[in-house]
Image (cartoon, rainbow, N blue to C red; front, side, top):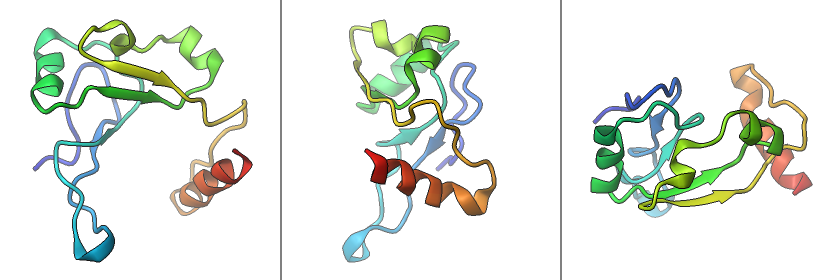
Length: 110
């Protein structure tokens, strides 16, 4: 299975399958993806998502980001789009060792 999924103009689309989960289980492949703003998707890219029933989009970007760069899938009839901004203007840390803690701090504030 591919960890990095090549779709559209997305630079950071990753499959979250194969990770350890509770009870000795493992997350399923091709069910949950994590990525940047979906742009430049072709009809074939959209079919790939629909064929795997990956049709819910949860956009965590700020209001400003979504206005500047709208999500291509927000207007697609086969997709359910939810905008749930995580940040209120603050920036997430870039260093790998700090990213996890940064997400938990954001969740604590919410």
